[in-house]
Image (cartoon, rainbow, N blue to C red; front, side, top):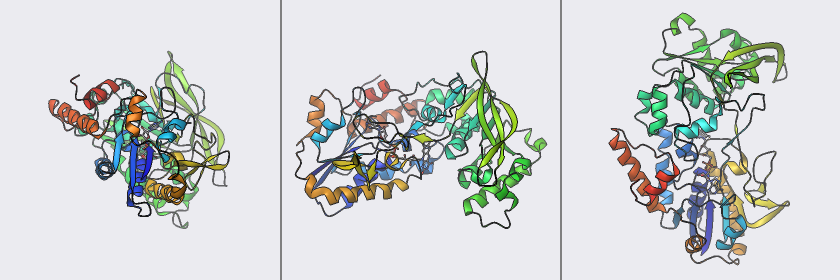
Length: 455
Ligand SMILES: Cc1cc2nc3c(=O)[nH]c(=O)nc-3n(C[C@H](O)[C@H](O)[C@H](O)COP(=O)(O)OP(=O)(O)OC[C@H]3O[C@@H](n4cnc5c(N)ncnc54)[C@H](O)[C@@H]3O)c2cc1C
């Protein structure tokens, strides 16, 4: 019997468990999927936007894996860090450990004023409307009239859309109570999305981009002059552009043709801005009051350069969506430049040498790129390495009952029944509010629900 611990129950952790079950070289496998949260699914629960129900429903296929009799969900167990189980001790309990801990820290902008009140990472904002228990449920009061979202990827589009979407539409989702209340009372009227490069280099996908134009009560504004600055846009007919770029440019061209007057009746305006590099967050009365951008222009070599001109955009709320990065897990090797764990085909490298019984998969292995499905092939590669090593691993000692040992160490894991109990409590909370399931946003509430206690 091969006993494997998978640390992290996001897509890469669950796909790792699935690949372990699906292989046939080692027939007897038991997998414990550990997570620091009492809830499974990682960013599918706490990242994917609540109004993207179809992607959210991926939880159902992840669930089928976690309900397999050879798999045990072990929530509320942190590995590494303060109060966590050190990786070296975890390694004593299993033949192999696969780290699938994601890369959910935000990249800094590194400009003055970044930490002013009113300036937040998109990570934090996403965690708030997703009810992540690490973020205070009443963390955002949306008194701002104008918001700037820095970054032109899908996360930037997600946060802009949530800001621009009416709370009425979000009522049908599992958005927590406090966030729905804050969004209902939001005074935000202008949402600027700004990127330092041109539209042909933006990283959003066309489906997500198009969605912005379909929001009731909101209109998208694109400056034709900024589109025209992009060499790819100007040469659209002649250049063999990637399909996604061509489609994005078509969508943007459509919006740029709308006259400002025709969008002035909209409740909210989303302004897509390009060739603007943030250089400073401006302050008034101790809070953020705007963003100073340097105007950039194509440098002829595929990049951009500053033109010497500046533009200030008013904003009482700034959301920085310039990418994610991995966080070092104490006791595990870490490459601070790439923000990932060094590995070869998923085998963790310690001082350049593969470490017996330690593996990685998902964002912490390859960085924060790709869609959810990309984690499946990533996990398969890691499991192939692990299974190749199985004859060696089987000679290592492992605990007969790792859960009993974890409990003896003073931990109180939340198992699958506990998670089902949280699901029931969220459904009951939703019913009491006349909504579908509504997420519980705090640790105390989640743990009480997991243990079937009334709060
Ligand atoms: C805001 C946002 C929106 C996204 N939307 C989409 C989308 O619409 N469509 C799409 O295809 N992709 C989307 N993605 C990408 C997708 O979410 C990722 O590809 C995927 O979640 C990465 O999987 P992962 O398992 O590596 O990490 P994660 O999903 O982050 O899972 C990591 C898990 O590890 C746990 N963990 C972390 N540290 C520890 C520890 N020390 N001990 C124990 N447990 C730990 C965490 O609690 C978490 O459950 C989105 C990403 C973000 C950030």
